[in-house]
Amino acid sequence: MNTSRRTLLTGLAGLAVAPTAVAAAPAPAVGDATVAEERFARMIAAAHAPDAACARHAELYAEAHWPDYVTAARAVLDARV
Figure 1: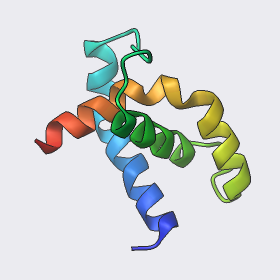
Figure 2 (figure 1 turned 90 degrees about the horizontal axis):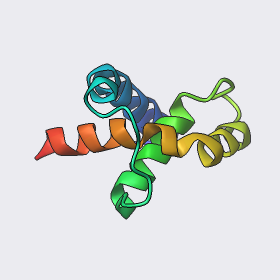
Figure 3 (figure 1 turned 30 degrees about the vertical axis):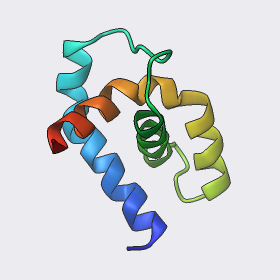
Figure 4 (figure 1 turned 120 degrees about the horizontal axis):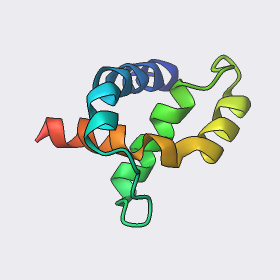
């Protein structure tokens, strides 16, 4: 699976779980995020970047906004188990 398809699917998974995850935990706890949660949150953030067609802009957006997506990443990772 190529990277753009993986990023798109990750973003869709984040969108599917994000509304319930945000309602469940309003404040993201970034300090205790695991490496897997951080990496997954960065992928979800990159998929939600305003200009996702440009990899550099998506990377910059993900770097700045990944803490906002930690809750969604946790919900997706917890749903896998």
